Length: 370
Image 1 (spheres, rainbow, N blue to C red):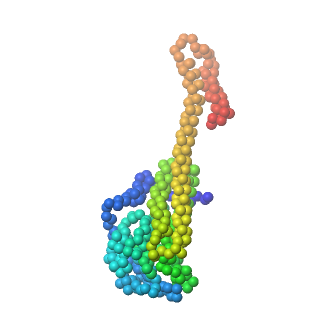
Image 2: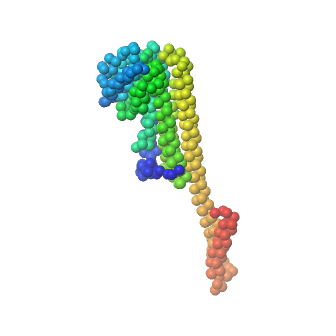
């Protein structure tokens, strides 16, 4: 696989290893305390889009006000209202109009909530995370989305108006051959969930490419920054686990639900989504094994480098040992020392100091010690 080092230049030249190891990212991922009431800032921009449709026709309402959205309620059409950007007053008004329980409204306005499914007062509520890959930061981002299913209506609440996964679904909804238009609101609810789950694989493919690049980087050379890259990948894996694993329970709860809003006919579609979630979980486990393998590879490379250094030092010590011994013998303060009075005695001693190490090097080479 061709290496793409430009994606990691920002890591290779960071002077601060704390920034490289992603200390702030750790706080962002792991700082979740359900005992503290989160304070959500009111969205500066709110975009409300609505679709009113049946098998024969579909009407699209773009960037409408909350008052216009409230006036769309009817019984002979299916309504899909999508809100990008959350404000408490908007959620309360829609909640009053469509019978959304106050507890569900709290979940809609919550922060870092765990994916779940609830049913209260003939309203089926699901909370999930939309994943996306941030190319600039090389990290996985998440956006909380709430899906409310009622009789003949679906309402979706999203945080960020700049990102949306459902444009393709909107385009299909306009087609006369669309399956969604010929079915109940539950099928739209299923399609939204299926779109969210399918997008997980796109994000995971990007993370897989990054894992492969870091693995190749470690094989090429090991240093502290290699360990930091492994640590960063492990943190991104935490985001995947926290977002994907609970979705299995969400889909399982929908399959086992006795809600009148869910029909037995659509159960097979939820089972298909469940299979996709299980497959995504298996991939996360595979990525975890790959990252652990990279960590073992890093440790092996460090040990290998240490062994090479120790081998060189041992060879140098062995090579210098004969010269040390010979020099020590001829440096003793005895009156009678062999060759001490000879004209060639010095050169013989120096020759021995050179010939013996050379012979030792040849012997080590033949035995494959270096």
